[in-house]
Length: 188
Image 1 (cartoon, helix red, strand yellow):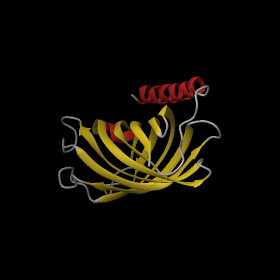
Image 2 (image 1 turned 120 degrees about the vertical axis):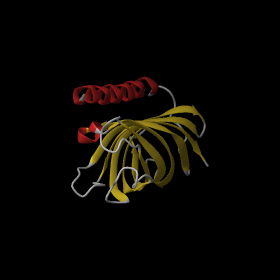
Image 3 (image 1 turned 45 degrees about the vertical axis):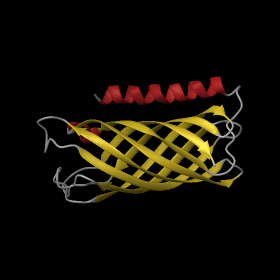
Image 4 (image 1 turned 180 degrees about the horizontal axis):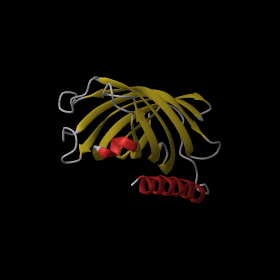
């Protein structure tokens, strides 16, 4: 299963980079000013986390505040992820997490290709259902993405991300997953 997830990650990254090269001939999205994005995210658990959960679906809202020439942004992100439990494993209950994070996003010069890193907290909405020892966890998430120009300040934001959440069980391990976020991005 890990080999399949690694292949999905490599293929997703190759797709984003391939589309970047193809779309480079097109104009970049006007990123001046504050940018907002909202959209769904699907994820695949990694490592021991995949032993108890199959996949997740969720969504997030993000605000990007320019700090340097519309290339470097401070980002604030909040959302919701529901991890679907495997039957007959652990409590058999879904895990709900509200991630809240902040970080930096950098666009490579004259392109819509970016890298982003965030850190924050993940708040469990189903602590009692999954018999967790903690209500919140530390999270960090690097990601790579691309804005597909829809005209003016509007774009489709496609990103592949890795996220790691610290232990929610005293004797547990970190919860890692690979996610794909597709969001509508617009400027204010």
